[in-house]
Amino acid sequence: MVCITEAHPWGIRTPLYQNEALSSWLIRAALDCGCDPLSLTGILWPKWRPWTLDIDQGLSQEYSKILVSVTSITQDQFDAATFKDLYLHNSEVSFKSWILALGAKNRKHKGGWQYCPKCLQEDSNAYFRLNWRCIWHVGCTKHDQRLLDQCPYCHSAIQPRLLEAPDRVIYCCAICKKHLFDEKEYPIDHNALAFQEDFDLFLKQGYAFYTDVLISIPEWLKVIQLFNQLIRKVLTGSLDSRGWKFLHELGITVPHNQLISTGLVLNQLSVLERERIFSCIYQLLNISHEQFVETACSLNMTRASFWDKRYQLPTSLLTIEKRLGTVSRGYSSLKVYPHVPKPSNKEAVLRKILRLKRKIL
Ligand SMILES: [Zn+2]
Ligand SMILES: [Zn+2]
Image (cartoon, rainbow, N blue to C red):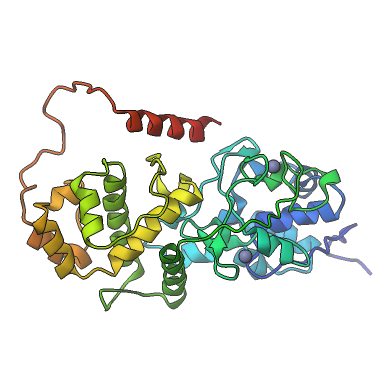
């Protein structure tokens, strides 16, 4: 009798948990086999270097069928451990920008992973959740606390792909080798957590609500992007600016008031910066257009006070645009004046340093 399928000399028995990220499973599988993640992937895919990429974004069939052949896990289960389905179901939106960027340089990375220390500690077999990679995930709803995006001891980015066989467990910091558990409480802003829950719910049901109107996910995301611009414009302004007065008049509370904005794109921001922005966005989403416009007018604010002139507002925000006036029409998107550098204030310089540090360290 001839066997037409090649019998594999060994198999991986590490189970894949619900909502576990593929990279987390692969790292655990390597440690369970008593080897480094790099060694295991070298055997599985000798001509491919997955750790220089972000495999949670999705694995092509060519590579995933090798995993299927050495485990009892199905192709669908592996796909569910990546963002493949999220991208497929929301093809009109570039969802990649809603997933934390690793900032990878070779196998090292500067960010992209976050976790709840209490979830890891309570797991009978600790693993990293796929949704901890989403930018809108800033807290743990089970433990009602903020996620951590760095080791609580050495403050390095969480990089389990750098773990080695002697480390044995995924909850070990790859840099200082301490366990990532932490008994400390990290209180989460409840508006940011409510935003996270709404975001998850809208994605699950396939539609969103804004001002009691049912809208599509792409439209809702446009509103979020525009509010993100508005909030970030305010946060970089001085505390006595009209933008801050606007938030104050509307009763919007800003967590981590003293935190300096780095100005990086959303998927490169620290969990603290995202918590602050999403908290403000959630509060803005619950302000009526009437109240928005009245407050803006009382402070002599126009559309240009909130948004860059070149951005087109989504349909859901057109009532605000119409009532704020059209002072921005007739502009040129290119600067016609020669560029004359102005002296930077202290906060702007600090912001630049923080941004640079996050990019190069
Ligand atoms: Zn938790
Ligand atoms: Zn550490």
